[in-house]
Length: 67
Image 1 (cartoon, rainbow, N blue to C red):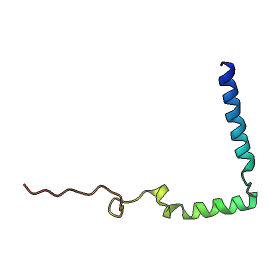
Image 2: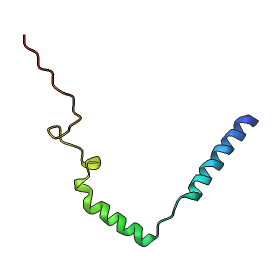
Image 3: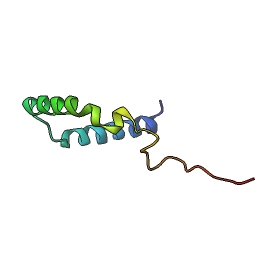
Image 4: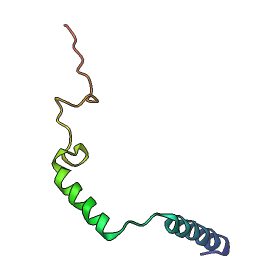
């Protein structure tokens, strides 16, 4: 690793650490409540269960052509 790439890598690491230091921490008791809420509602979450093709408004439209 050359000197300039080493400096660039270190700057990126410092930026990442500064970003992580600014994050608001959550108390353990709140995290447990959040985990419980997520587990209880997981079956209704379309990001976890997917969306059926019949109710998906973004599915590709079928093209109807007459011969």
